[in-house]
Image 1 (cartoon, one colour):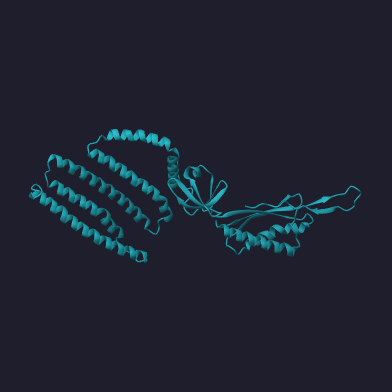
Image 2: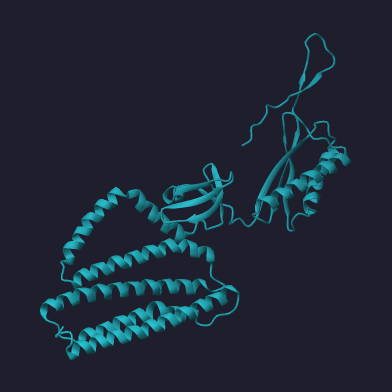
Amino acid sequence: MQTLLEWEYLKALSVIVVGSLILLLVNIILKRRIRKMEAKKQEGKKTINLNFMRFFQKIAVPLAFLGLLTVAVEMVAFDDQIQKIVKISFSIIMTFIIVRSLNKTLELAFSRYFDHDWANHDREKNLRPLLSLIKFIFWIIGIIFLMANLGLDVSTALAGLGVGGIAVAIAAQGILGDLFSYLVIFFDKPFELGDFIVFGDKAGVVERIGIKSIRIRVLSGELMIIANSDLTAARVHNYKQMLRRRVVFKIGVLYETPAEKLEKIPTIIKDIIGSVQTIEGVICDRSHFFAFGDFSLNFETVYYVPTNDYNIYMDTQQEIYLKLVRAFKEEGIEFAYPTQLVYTKAGASKPVETEVVPPPQITK
């Protein structure tokens, strides 16, 4: 007690107590101010220097406390035993505050960038796992520096980490492969959140891209979780990046159709495609009489729909087909259906026409 009552100890203690109270008061004021500004931001009102206030509250105040603690420690000459305890305690506090301040600075920079209207907010969700990984690396580096400041043999620890890292890498090849696949997806951007993709026999919308796995909402409704490495190794069709959809359809008419009506069919189809009302900009590329089928004269048509929306594409196709049925009915053109001619051997003079009914199709 006599030692603690000495002037230099009292002076250092008063610096810590008074300074801590002031910083605590500043922290409370900043917290209240930030809450009010965040409430205004949620209401759609403009806020000035919100990130600046967060910087002071989360970074500047802890660093000021570290500086205050440094000044107080320098004011007192401790004996050897107490000096060792003070050094260890100060090193731990300093490491914690510095690493935390670096992580908070990274978070604020991240938030400030994506606060802009022009920022891609889907990419923000992709970056979150990478941000957590960087923060974890900062803590590892901070612990290594702390060990060095405490006089421990860091080289031995690093060598042990190296050997242990090799063992962990061998045991966790799949996890590391998924991590590198995540980096490939992040930088190469084969798909992003909200994209409709098809891979293998599966198709769905990307809902989340994580460090280890990707979550895809498939068409049947369930959530499919697939490893990053499996998806990067597969052939992926990204329909979100489709600027327009190329559609090919074929129709067949009866062999008994007159030649003059066959000549009209491409024109009829082109006029129908040109009059589509579901969406503007539908373009007919070509329509031709292209093959003699087993029981029909076949026409092939190619047109483009300027959208990647599947529902709009189906509505467009439905409109074209319905108009085609009406136009053929008006022109007296009949669609062909599977038929075959059977001739009897006992001198039958008239062939018998029979209908071939195709087997039922099983749809998924």
